[in-house]
Image 1 (cartoon, rainbow, N blue to C red):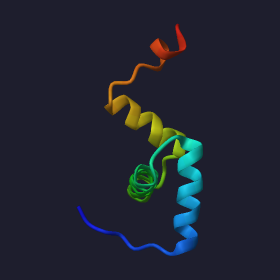
Image 2: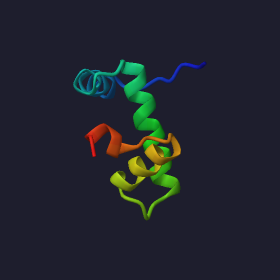
Image 3: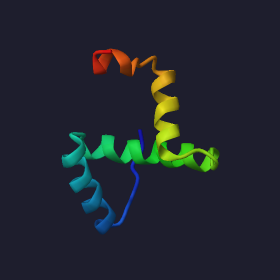
Length: 68
């Protein structure tokens, strides 16, 4: 594990977003880092496509969640 230094303004935005997304500050930062890396390596994919692909990799069946 390492330490990542970010500026105070960005840290504050991560803190606010983490409360909305019900994640820890670290989990929110990790999520944004992962999504950013996936977006950079898959520039033709939209955010929704990236998330959908990650859900498939995790074997999430949204139909079960939605009750279909």
